[in-house]
Amino acid sequence: MATGQTATVNGLELHYVDHGGAADVSAVALHGFALNCHSFDEVAPALSDQLHWYALDQRGHGHSDRAAELGDYSRDHMADDIRAFIEAQGLDRPVVLGHSMGGMNAMTFAAQHPDSLRALVLIDVGPGASVDGVQQVRQFVAGPYELDSLDAWVEMTHQYYPFRSKEGIRKRLEVSLRETPEGKMAKMFDERFREADFRGVADARAGIWETAKALTVPTLLLHGEKSPVLKREQAEEFAEQVPVVRLVTIAEAGHSVAGDQPEAFVGAVRDFLTDVL
View 1 (spheres, helix red, strand yellow):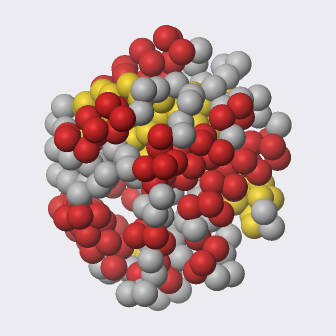
View 2 (cartoon, helix red, strand yellow; view 1 turned 90 degrees about the vertical axis):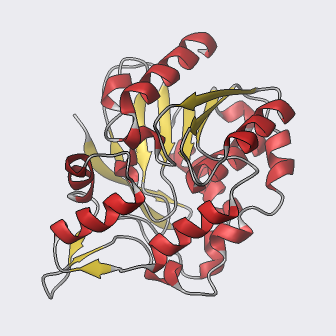
C-alpha cells in the first residue's frame, strides 16, 4: 500500500511516496518540473513485482521543502539529493527513473555515481530539446497558480495533455493541488519558479551533452511519439551518440509518457528490466 513519508536530505525535508511491495530491487522515481511524486501513480503498482518504488517530491515541489535560494535548484543540487536520499534510505543500487527535469537530474546522478544504480530510465528527455516544447512547459508554469475549482483545473490542464482523459487528469489533480484559505485550488510548487528571471530549466541544459556521453549504466529512453519537447530526431541522436541508451518510442503519447500511455510505458519498462536486471 502506498504511504507518504519524509526524509531529511541535504538539510531539507523531502516528501516521498513509498509504493510498498516485496520486490527485491528498489526504484527512485523523479517527476518533471512543476509536477510531483504522483506522476507515477498510474504505473508504479503494475511494476511492483519487479520494483519497490520510492517516488520523490524533489526540492521545491509537492510537499517537500522549498530551497532557500533560487540558485539552490541547480541540476547538481538536485542530483545530489538523489544520492543523499538513496543513502538515507539504505537502498542497494536502485533503478532510477526520471521524467523531463527529473530525467536530467537522474542522468547527472548516473554519470557522477555509476556504481550507485543498476539502470536508468529516462522519460522524454535528452541532451536535445525542442525550443517550442520547452517554451510550452514554461508557459504552463507561468500560467495561473490558482483557480476557483478542480473543474477549472481539469479543463485547463487538458489543453496541455490532450492524450489523457479528463477523468485521468482529475484523479491526478485531486492529489496535486492544495486548497487556499480563500477556498481556491492552487498548485504545489515553489511560486518563485514562475518569475521571469528564474533560469533553472534553461541553465540545467548547460553541459548536458557531456553528462549524457558519460553514461555507462544500461539506460532506457522512453520517447513520446507526439511529444512537443523531445522530437524523434533528437531522441535518435541521443541513442546514436550514447551506446548504453536503448530508445523506445511510445505511440500516441506526448511529453508525459507514463500518464498518456501507462500500459505501453509499463510494457517497455518491464521488457527493459527483464533484460538488464
